[in-house]
Length: 108
Image 1 (cartoon, rainbow, N blue to C red):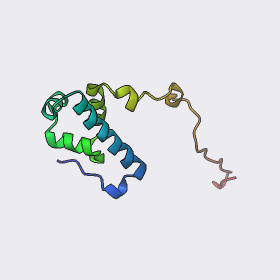
Image 2 (cartoon, rainbow, N blue to C red):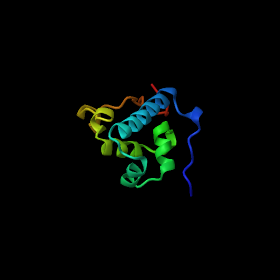
Image 3 (tube, rainbow, N blue to C red):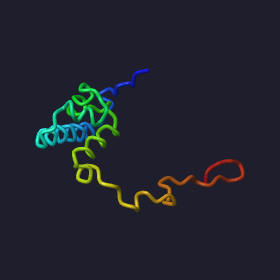
């Protein structure tokens, strides 16, 4: 079954801008490194149509494809650095706390 394409209006503007910028970097780095589209596609095991979607910044292309292209082109650390360890702590406090209830089931 084919993937559902994200409706462009459902993707926040900031995300669309970031994806377009990522696509531009993929295209420019591929050109700068004189890597033919067909060769990058072979290394990523994707079709040329999918590469065109990546280079346009299509939200439906999938994060793993963007990250794979970054790795192959050698720009992973600049475009998608690892998050700070503090953001990955499992025991971080919850943002929303549930208020305690009284004996009747009502909130205090």
